[in-house]
Amino acid sequence: MTQKQANFLEGTFAGGGQMGTLMCNFDWASTSLGSVENWSQSLRTSVGILLNSHYPVVIAWGCELLQFYNDAFIPLLGDKHPHALGQKIPQAWPEFWSGIVPLLQKVIDTGEGAFLENMQLFVMRNGYIEEVYLNFSCSPIRDDNGLVGGIFIACIETTQTAANACAREEERKRTEASAQVERVAQLPQSTTEYERQLRLLSEVTPGKLHSILESITDSFIALDKDWRIVYINQKAARKNGQTPNEIVGKNHWEHWHWLAGTQIEQEYHRAVAEQVPVHFEVPCQPLNTWLEIHAYPSEDGLNVFLRDITERKRIEVMLRESEERLRLAIEGAGLAMWDWDLVSGQIICSDGSQAMLGLTADTKMTYEIFLNAVYLDDREGVERAVQQAIAGENDYNVEYRTIWADGTVHWLASKARVYRDENGKPIRMTGVGLDITAQKQAQEALHQSEAHLAMAQKVAQVGSWEFDLASQKIIWSETTFQHWGFEPTQSEPSYAELLERVYPE
Image 1 (cartoon, rainbow, N blue to C red):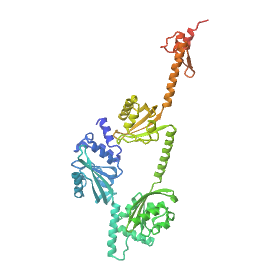
Image 2: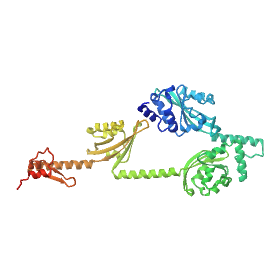
Image 3: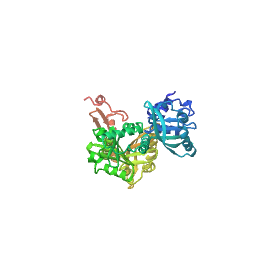
């Protein structure tokens, strides 16, 4: 493999984690897809999206439906990983292929997306066979000719939801079979009763529901219709410095009395009253934290997932403060910022950018409007600098003129950087501009002053010289060269050479 081919492979599978490495080393040339450098742009782009997705994703490509998948999908494969990579979907998933064939065929035939809910799988993972439920969202991927070249399959595991549904169904059956068995979701009257109910639930779902709720990264609380806590996982209990047994059975608003009257209470009541899920972020002052809350109403009460987002909020505050400091620095320096989306063509400017170009503040900036604002004699040079920067040939660093509506000429200096995606394609160009009219006017005034001085000295036959003490360098006017008998085209003489020209007496 040449270095160029190796670089191409790394670029195609960049940012893909474990699966990116496996795909980079996979012998694709032995499949119907052929070597990676011959893949269509559509396939390479789709694989890039798959590898960088945080959700479980599978791509089935070509008439053979060859399989790609990302790191997030690995846990759903169980012992099928890693040999499932590059396999035909029917070979990789024989146990449920017959159930998903119509779905995939519909996507291929119609070019329209399809959805499959709560597909049941049995996967060998964590050392034993687990029952897993998934929602599949299947979308067609168009090839470079506009035809359906493959299928993009996004997966969401719904095992928890399915387990809850199974638990409710089994609970109903047990209630019918014996009036002595209370409903699993009913309020426990004591810690002993709670433990008994939890054991019953464990029997109904073979430990799955409890296992899931204890393994998730979020805190979880289940409330009945009277706002009493019927379940709380270890993570949520630890946040309060307690065990689940110390919390279960208590009234939510009495146990966390400081939440009464807050947004949390308002949203919980709205979810139950309107039977709609709610999602919100809220500060929790007693715990000095920020929480992201998802609450889902049910026929038995309310299920609540809570996530600590304190660190994210802290970073957001720091980012806003940093952006404000940057804005103040930019305004203080008289700079204007702009950001050009090279894909969509949209240009976003900071306040004052349009004014620098002699445009009104409400002007919606485009590349064409910008070019038209550049002085005609400078326009070609600016456009060439832009294209060279996008092509990666040179940095964008230009000076150019604009003419305002009042007829005045203004000089601007601009620098920018081009940003590229993992494949090296330019996607953004971000830069700053500075009005340097005053500097240019000062330079021109100095130039004219020096020209006038030179003219006056020439007419009066007066020479001038300047000695730089720091560099020990002397600068002569043309007349001074003539006075000493030197040619103006040569460099200034040394001190020793001058002494030789001085009359000895």
